[in-house]
Image (cartoon, rainbow, N blue to C red):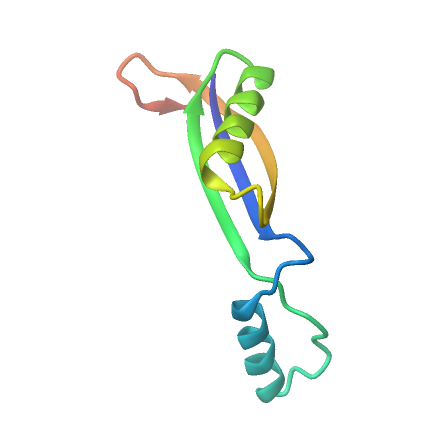
Length: 94
């Protein structure tokens, strides 16, 4: 089965976020005064072939733990959905 996984990586709440602070200041300077805080992060989309939902989730979790997120300063969240069956030529088939 072909799966699409979304991985959301964010800084832990106790970690300073200079990029988030810069975005926050910019928004407020443009008149978006209701914005109280901005935390920046990464959004990654992966497409992979695995035999079932459980295997797909476990594989993406392993990737996030080992490569995509720095466990010391970042948290991550994974969403996985089936998007189709593998085609014989390697193309996606819905």
